[in-house]
Length: 346
View (cartoon, one colour):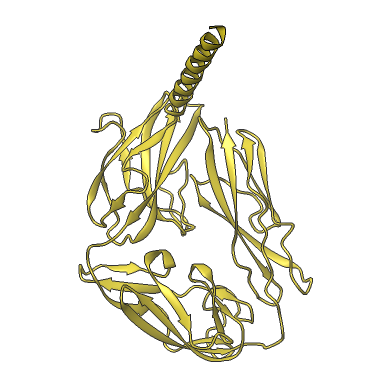
């Protein structure tokens, strides 16, 4: 009899604990519409709706769209900021909107593939205390329009190295250099969409993988001199690009980037990102390039050093930030990107 009573009490405690945990989780600032994983059509309007959670003093919520693999992020404290890594504000939600701090949100007309919707809430408790919190979801944007043609936004044929554009993709062409092709598709709705990423349905093939090698995520790497033809396929359509590579053929193995392991830090602490385990086969010195690819934008220090850092922001609930590291050796060979997630908790 005692055992039954104890078991019953234990069950009640477990249920109560589960309810309490669920209630606590529901207190976080959260995007509740559109839903995580929703399938959306570009150019249509959806309703943006947020649960403010336990945070008081929210004065506005800014919404931003960006591709899942994009480096384009937003300034937390400046809705008018401009620049190559700043995404324009898609909607500013205020308290008198319907729904509050939400409203009609246009899905980007040129959107395609997985996209993130980022909502940044500005909290004000007087002139001297301002901060922001965020939530983000991943949705799938798929146009109803059919793909008509594929085009390369580059010279044709593409010449890499001494015979052509020595810095066409950011720095001097060399063995081991990694680059992305700017590929766009024209659709029957008249919209031209960027389809460089395999996430948009694009695949790549090189006719000579001893000249250009196809890596994951739509990245291409120079591995030798000569000619090749790159074939791009998407939704039953194809396009081809002739490539002529003429670079210094001194043997050189690409470096390997190591962004460290995922970890969790407390708000208000200094977070250090370490690329010290990155390495080069020939033992050469490396050039580092850190960037943030997920979460509301942070002010990072030493982004071109082996160890970048930032101050962990104030959060109401756990939030995850993602960072990308690319390293390049002295001869111009690049690494495949490495990623690390940093979870900030209150």
